[in-house]
Image 1 (cartoon, rainbow, N blue to C red):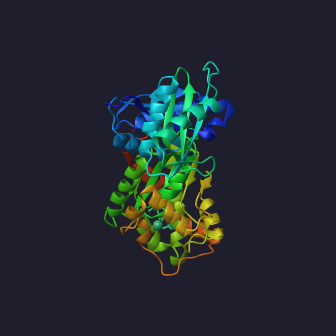
Image 2 (image 1 turned 60 degrees about the vertical axis):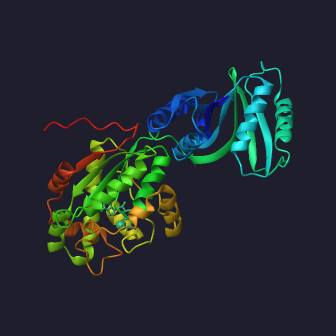
Length: 405
Ligand code: ATP
Ligand code: MG
């Protein structure tokens, strides 16, 4: 049995800067952590002096503590995670805890001690704590070098409210703001590489995300819907997606493809998608739409076409990847864990009824003239009503009330 209780210290810089909103952010992050870490051996989660403290059950193994730490690292709002022990406000106990923590941080070559005390009621100041704990560690790890700059490991010793927290493993988290602190967005989610990354970027800025996927069903199979579900399950781990609406879009695309000028089809599909997404956003009380577009990446992602699609909706359309390179987006999709799923091929509405030469510089007048042939308002309501919701675990998400039939 371990002498000390294992703890994980969660640091959150950016929230600390937010002045008056601070306690709202802290509470949001605490709630998100509580809801998302249900599978780990946790006793309680407390807020304490600018940090969130996760207390692990007695007898928790290093492996289990590390797995929990890894899960916390990916949760929006977490700037840094440190993993160690709780001990008494007693120099000897601190030294012993520091030895165990440092041994668990192998492999490393150099270290230093960084102590801080939150209450001057503790008689030993931080400089003296550094020296005393440092001396104990030097004796226990004679082969390791003490280094004040560029050290491999920093042993943290924090004296806070009656206890001490000692840790060695410490890693940067994903950063950003806790999901639920920046409102709700509706994110257009294909099964491609870009849109899950776009959604994730908004979630990292604190937005609760609701996905909308346009399926080619019944003109295509529902294969893309399964990929989108797999993607949502990956995103779900960090609590950023509350729901995905699947819209069976194939018949409507067919209608457009039969009578609209071929070059304008893609723009017309996209304008209809935006309108349906906007209607869903209204029902979800969301404040913006999000897409994974990146300037110039494909023929449809030109400034003219962006203008022509944006003109179909009143809501702001956010494009967090607009200035990103494909390789950067791929790196992020890999880190996020969606890349492999997105690399699988599935026909969705994008592959359906594609013209040979899509317009790259659509003129709004031409687009609007071509659109006049369709009963758009009725279509938008039909499609939004036909959208099939699927829910995911997101502590900050509140589904809209059921609409009267
Ligand atoms: P992605 O990798 O996200 O599919 P892409 O590079 O393939 O993007 P497009 O197919 O032009 O580019 O799509 C641009 C954006 O439009 C997507 O990022 C997504 O936000 C939205 N979108 C495209 N197809 C769909 C779909 N079937 N359902 C929902 N949104 C879509
Ligand atoms: Mg795509």
